Length: 304
Image (tube, rainbow, N blue to C red; front, side, top):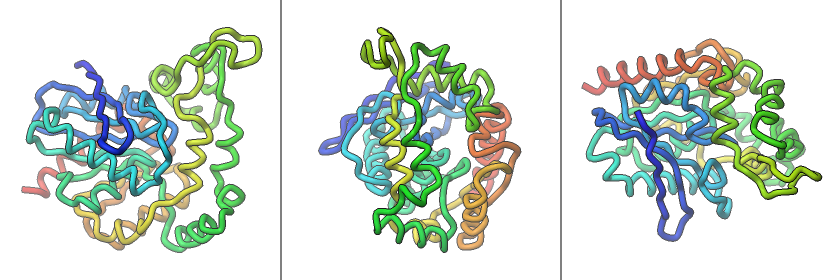
């Protein structure tokens, strides 16, 4: 199995890069990554999924190898992903496409599907990062008032994030001790260090002549946290199914409440919990691949 590079220059939009497999499977999984990550970060899980399905993963602007572009927010980014997918006809080749997305990627997949309901045969959303309706309304008011940085739990820590290391080994050792990465497998963390980091200009950190930094600048990652999608809950209510919403048992409590609410307001959504946190697919990549494959098998039977 080999990953092939993808490069899409959208007319009037950004350049999106990514990767795909070309093993000739019957279906294609359109994978969208989480905030601050990129598609290849999930390689331990993807290598297992690619045994049954071909993969197409595009990195949003400022992530992975996709150049940074003007920040246009959640809904327009979802539209860019849809436009890019339409230009991938030679990769998709008239096969059924199923969406798989983690965190921000799960949210963008939902926004895309709500606007273009015939795009995906089904969806598997891995711990999408969303607020329940009352909290979403409150955060929307805070965002309109320009107070998100003061109230959002992720913005300030992200802006304080370190972004420079003498080499990838130092970066690996650093992240290995950080809370969000503490339960990741070494293979998963190696994928993060290999694909979510880039060589930086010499002399960027003090007197160090060679260093690495994150592909996604902390300011951009914080910008995603500090903004919200438009019409999120109307989109969830009309989301075409079937949709599997798989949440980590130890993920953010507000996301768990929102996932349960999504199942209540849309019968096409099937909510379930699995061991692990928000990044359970990095903690248990083999098990996560199994969850996705099992959901897709169930969806196939539902679509008959």
